Image (cartoon, rainbow, N blue to C red):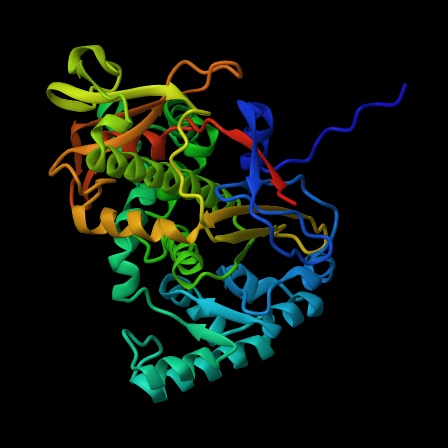
Length: 445
C-alpha cells in the first residue's frame, strides 16, 4: 500500500482546508463571454490558498500569462523587488503596471541604496520615482491634476499614495481595523510582564504562544508575534496597508489586481478583509431595505439581555433582529460587476521554489458601504442614526445555516491612540471565526 502524501499547505490554506465549507450554494450567473479556460467568477467567491505547488515564480507566471487582463495592476511586497530574480516573472510584471505603496517604498530604501539583486529593476524604480518628482515635487503625488494623472498612468511602475479617494472609501478605517491583529502582540506581552515579571526568552515565547493561540488561533498568534517583533518600526503595518490599498484599487477602478508576496501573512490578511467587507455590504443592504420598506422584513424587538451575552455587544434595552436561513436572505442586487483580487504567494528560498495561489472576487458596488464606513466612523449603515447593523450566524450545521441581522446601538471598544471600533468588527477581525459557504457558480445559457 502506498503511503498517503502529506499535503503541503500554507497556514491559511490549512485553516480553510481543515475547516471545510459549512454548506454549498449554486449561484446562477448572467450570461457573458469568458476567455478560453476561464471558470465563471461569482461575486464574493474565493479560491485557495492552494497547496504549495512545486513550481517557480517564473513557471507560474508563464502558466497564468494568457489569463492576466491587459489592464491588471500588480502590487508587490518588498521581497519581490529585492530577491525575486526570475526573468519570466519580471517579464510578466513589467508587461502590465506595478504599484508601489508608501510603506513598501520605505522598506525598499536599503535595496535602493545597495541592491544585492535586481540592479536593473532598481534602476527602473528609480527612474519612475524621478519622473514623479518632476511631475509633483516628490515621489508620491497626492490628488494629481488630470494631466499629471494621465502621465502617471503611462508609467510601468507607479508610486501611489492613498489619496482622498481612498480615504473616502474606508482606507483609514480598514487599515486600522486589520492592524488590531498586530497591536495585540505588545498588549499580550504587557499582560505577561504584569503577571510574571521579566521572563527568560524561552519561557516568555512559550507563554506568549499559549495565550495568543488560545485567544486568537494560530493565524492570530503569527500576526501578534510579528506585531511584537516590529514594535516601533516604520514598516509595522506595511502588510495591512498594502492589502487594503490593493483591494480598494480593484473596487474603485473596476480592474483585476494581483498581490505578489513572499509573506505568509498577506494571503491571510486578504481573506480576512474579503470576509469583513462582504458582511458589511450585506448588512448595509439589509438596513436599507428595512428602512425603505419595514413590512418587507420580519424584524422583531429583542431584549438585549437575551442577545449574544458572550460578547455583550449592545447598549440599551432592546435591539431589532431578523433571523432567517441563508437561502432566504436574498439581499444582493441582481446586477453586479465582479473584480478579482489574486494573491501569488512565493517561497522565500528560490533554490526550493513553490507557489500558493488564491483569489477573492468583489462586487464594485461595495464601494457604497466603504463610503458609509468612512463617513460614520465604522458603522455599516447610515440609515438609523448612531445604530449599527451587523450580520451574525446561529449554531451552524450544513443543514441549518441561519443568518442573524441585528440593528441597535453597538458597544464600542476604544483603542488608545488608534481609534474606536464596534464589538462586532473587533470580534471578527481578531478571531479565527470565519464560516464559509462554498459557492458553485453556474453560468446561465
